[in-house]
Image (cartoon, rainbow over all chains, first blue to last red; front, side):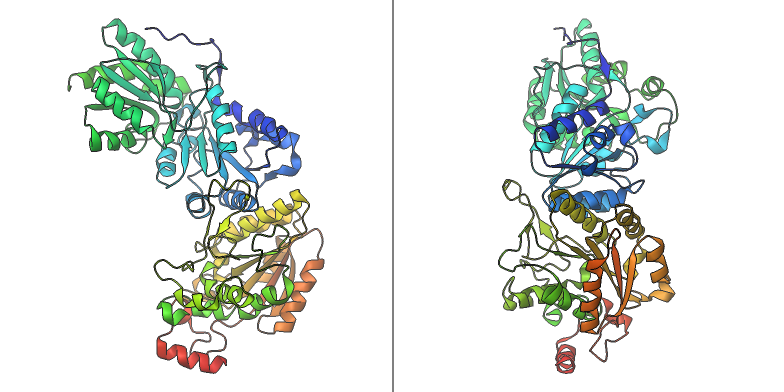
Length: 318
Length: 263
């Protein structure tokens, strides 16, 4: 079964933020945005141009950024705070923990430039631990959209639904895989193709390579189910257990460390309920380096080829 | 209250008594029957370990029964060791936190965060056109935290004249005297350099404190910082200026002696 994509366009998921915020404000949502001097890169600045009185620049001060967002939310606003994923949560984890996580305040964290596809800026800008940190917090919704269409819908979901949200976007342009008919659902995986031999569970920019890997494997007679697990927390446990039951082997794929992100969280559900052989594609306990996004993804195995190979290896353990 | 709990922070609570009394008793517009009144003034307790003095003031004002004070820090009590708030999702029509204890505005305990939170509240009031004033009570040891200075820059940059910070300058922190642990003086010059209007006051002269807070309300185009010169453990002879009582609760016998002295 071949998956047909809606277009050959590419776009960065970060491009969804500014326009979505502006549109939702036009619809009357009581939004206030706190920015850490990266609004031009995260596109939050589009909101600032349209609504300067609701756009609070705090400069390069992430701890203060979180506190200001929490105070806005406590006073009734839908507070959005945005900067790079390396700094959010990296630079302000305690603030998020104390002011947003346990209080359950209405704060939406949109972290851009997640993963190694940040590229040339190098390690300090490449967040590969951010999902682990955010997933550790009870009550926090964590979403990693696969493309700009899903990103816009995820941001809208976060702004319309109460409670803390963390949405991780990326710098690099990636293929658009959804069209306007798509409906993102919080906590529900989206199945791209069904299969019976193995399941590839991917999120973020690894979803398209997962689809491509499944195509390659299909030609070898290996029939893979492909799931976009855009919501990391709360995980779609039902879909994960069904994958184990129906296909008997799972490979996860993420632009993140495998020992503490999607792979680790899926493992916990599998081992506790329905153990099956598992494989993991992602960063293997090390940092990357400066380089072009495509080169880095290739070097560290975050590719369709890397996923396909991991599936072949896992199938031997079935 | 602290003796009943068996743990807590008497020194920094006693040093803030007049400040908290002035705020709840005279200065702030607030309503114990309507703790979430949108136009209320707000006290953000950044030095969250001084929760006992704020709980006491709230109880005296009628936010909750005075008898509840002896439940401080006990399992199942609303009176957590450091103040906390909890927002119950699903109550979309309120869109403000359901305070764990009526009158408490922020979850505290991790120092250095309250001023940032206060800025968010002050800006929200400005966006909405409300004339609420936001008061933030900080400790002087707390000024070690860099986030305080991020917030100080930010409040002045955004000309938040509906925000007043009060620094409880009792010169002692957990491990000893501030001058020995980490010197933060001169405070006046620092806050002025960060763009704040500074007022210094004897933190135990109630009328002077009220005057200072009243003057702060008139400051325009910049936030105001009141440096209150205080004595940690004020009013209890064996606690005054004694770092030990930063984080050590009195025994029941000590509590009796202390209360006798304070009477």
